[in-house]
Length: 84
Image (tube, rainbow, N blue to C red; front, top):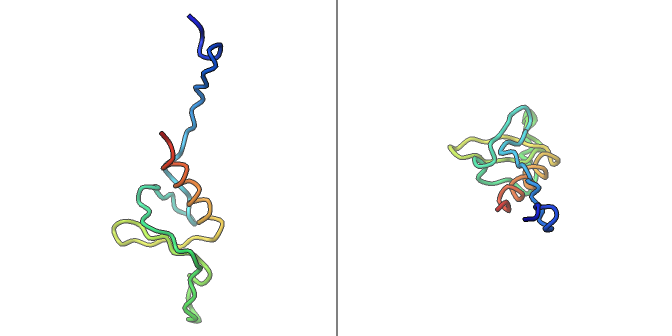
């Protein structure tokens, strides 16, 4: 009987976290409904979300993310969904 390595089998396991940090929150990936492709712009003087991307979560909740965070979130969702 041969070992897995000797038989050419690769059993490395990729561990994927189900959480992604957005702003100061740990968001479970399965709660994300959609991510805006363009940053928010409403023109209001006191708007605190200007230039951020909207991330819609189940339950009608919304969080606001920087471009870097949305890119990371998209990558994590794609990796999570491609796991076998």
